[in-house]
Length: 131
Image (cartoon, rainbow, N blue to C red; front, side, top):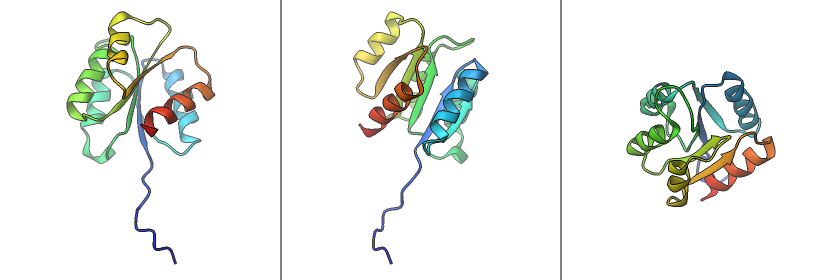
């Protein structure tokens, strides 16, 4: 019988990307490694998930920089207002200055260039969640 009293919790990730195929690929990669994954097609849907008590605590937001409606940076700012220690990965094929300054000033934030491989994604997620 184990005397270990800590209960392990699966880390939860929210993917916000307007491309359904990108959400599906990222979800599959992360779920296959044991992460609990939620998906949103835009910033508004992502904020609703972040606010929903039934999702439990979220550990990481992976957001596309360019989405219809609110940008990934706007989503990240709103998300941090809700969950101060939320870790964030921005994804994009371009590196806009507002994202780079956000990432440079924040140890809980990273940028991942699109297209990225599964191993790059998993390494980035693992590194950020270990902080």
